[in-house]
Length: 260
Image (tube, one colour):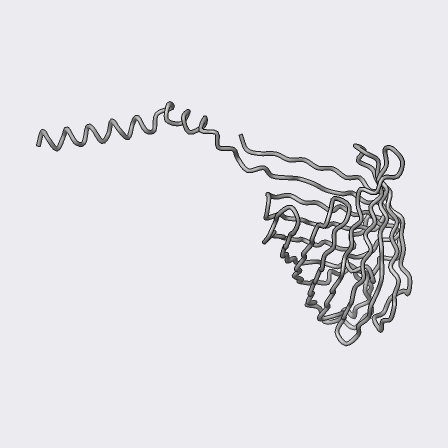
């Protein structure tokens, strides 16, 4: 019995010492660092709201809030888009995960539910009324990009969307070839980024090809940038304008944080 009590006492003493503040202090000073998280975003004011599929537009001035919060691989990237009159246009709630991430090549996958808001005439109790409704969509994407140098990257992007509404498109496929020309110096303190894109779009039974590009002028260490964008229809049976363009003012912010 004495031997048994001695073993219990020894075990209790060892447990007490391992849970003592000194034990915690050694763990805290072990050099392990909490992973960094980010909270980034871009606020955009534009004369013409253009969708993430640039063949579609709001057709009037808009303001965008594109945000990103998360870690090195997994992020939540919501997109909130409004008309300048305050009416919501689209809410896109992206979740993205970087499957491959190194200095030259990145491969990511993502999915989102989305809500497209619009005024629509509906029949209620036999009467035609105008109502503000939300159309529901679900989409998934695959995005890969290869960085040839600090100034030139190329990638392929694919998105498939499904609509869950009595009216409107049911299936949308969007396949794009992207080029990125960045850090092009314009004078001593300014840089230009050019992002041309050739894409194929299929909406139910209609399809087409398009060419577009954005031009973004920014000043070093200054959060505000100026951007212009155009999208030209090459050949398409999808409803929409032959030429879509806009000019925008962008405010960018970026923060990192970690648990201490």
